Image (cartoon, rainbow, N blue to C red):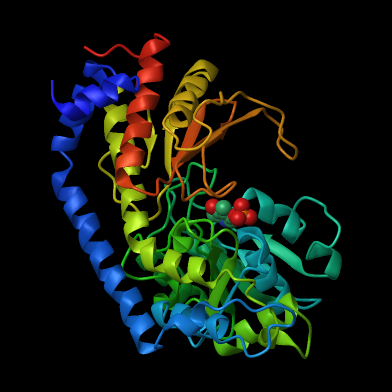
Length: 428
Ligand SMILES: *Cc1c(COP(=O)(O)O)cnc(C)c1O
């Protein structure tokens, strides 16, 4: 038995599970090579932007208080703007999460009487309260912003006639969510998003388009900002933080949209001038530098999971052979026991809190019990290896992240081991 297999066995992976994994990996060489190609391109893109903006040790200094003339912060925003090919960027630790970044982008650019349109169906859970689809204090609805939605076609495509119909004189901003989130629709490619943006702007040239880019950054060589989005928005504890950013969000886009976002985030008149960096610049720069390879590792993990589980009879979204536009992998495990076993495996493979046992619990804001597995250095970080899902049919676990491919691999092997141990999977 080889050294690695022995160590894995000591950690609880049986020879049968290990062998199954190796066999699956044999078939994935070409796909992994093309992921590495994208990562190499994106790595060069980030380094090029850092060089162009003369990133230096002075950029890593901490600032406090108002944070006027914060060289590191202002330069990081120029680096983001160059990578996303936008006029401007707002990248701040004061943006607390992805939902906050999206809220800032929406509320800064929608005024009372304006209408928001989602042409891609129901937005991500937390956005529903932001918009006011589910009632909440301070929602956009409370401020007199109306909302319209066009659902996707049954095959996951865009319903162009209905979208044309929905765009009216009040339509000010169109929101497009790239990733499927907790839905079972496909994630859109940047090219598809570009086609949708072109269509919408064809109907109404001055309409603004925001793309919720969560989980999509660096999966392709292009970003939504390359295909006409006025604002591209995401979280730094997902892809672009590279696992090192402990907090933050970004909005890359036109100078006009981004400056309005800055006025909304701080205060009218203050805008981008305030907001101390609190010593977080080394993590934000270095995380962005690492992000292309971290995302590549997470994507390999997602593909490995789909190719391991699909042949065992578990439906995977995206499917084993499908192309990828984000790092999320849904695996339908068919039972509560299956979800628990899978999550136990992810937890048991973590560098942090591996001794904890994930159990379904009544999480505020959800109708069903939810199970979550995470052993992360940054709390709640989902660029780190994690899995979660609501306990309801089809008993799907949403699996994502992994700061390194080898950690993702170990987590997935461990999940299969727990399934085998629970008698839910028999390896032939
Ligand atoms: C994660 C996510 C968000 C919001 O993220 P938080 O950081 O948890 O607030 C929004 N949209 C999508 C598609 C996401 O995946």
